Length: 365
Image 1 (cartoon, rainbow, N blue to C red):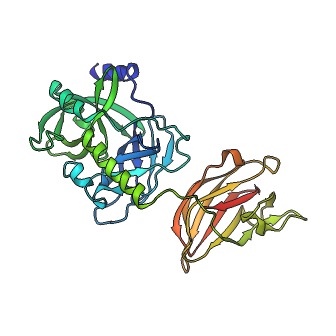
Image 2 (cartoon, rainbow, N blue to C red):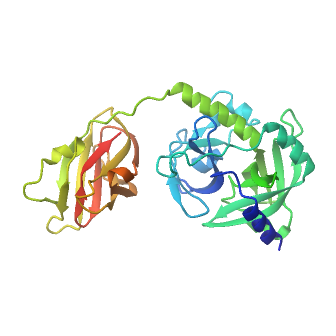
């Protein structure tokens, strides 16, 4: 009954637009959770998450991850930025280094779709948390959402005024949620009939069914430093097209087709048939040494053919093919969905489409 009432309250008191929990599927096999929010600076979508969810502690470079929201919509992040990589960010996070922020890759949300902010004004946290000993923890595990009450049984009485807290389920039957995969879940507070993030779980203590959580005003302070660092070290520039050459085709061109070399330039319309004995059409591109490729876009004119979904593979010199994504869309120019590459040459890229294919242009950025 208590869980039902909490879920009903969430329906009546929605969270700020697009601020929401997400489930994270990291490239090294770990699952965890994070909080999707919008930057107050430019509205860009970000995800806050524990650092260990994005990559093992011994790995200095964190890799992009896939995430899904409560509706099952998935997306991909760019490279996560750990707080320990930015001067002053660990101190802003009340001394916690197990925290990271990941920009969301284009295509996961519509432009301007992240209008939320990262929690309430800092002064409200100390006031509200003193008035309540309970929070509502929401968790996504295996594609399903659950919410249960947690108690603040201890908080650090230091200069950070309780920013680090120890949580315990108010009802012992909810201890079943205090398992692996809970890291990054968020305990919510209700203010003016709306739910706001109160604290993020950084670690679960399975032995005594408790969880260590960090208050969101300190997460917001750390993010401000990380975002300012990113903006200062990499000022916005216009994205330039990458010079790459078509290096191979496994398929059949229509008689009289335009030179396929134009596919990486001004484009055109090519209808490609399956080569004898094959099941797919392959297009290969060679990226020169030192050239950085962030995105690949594949498009076709609306009178050229039907959209398709391709595999996007990469091959380093002397190595075999490895898949980057299984859902690289070849679609119309007004609906282009960029495919993440995020690599520096030299390497080859391969687009593979099951069956016959139509394509108008491949651009790299």
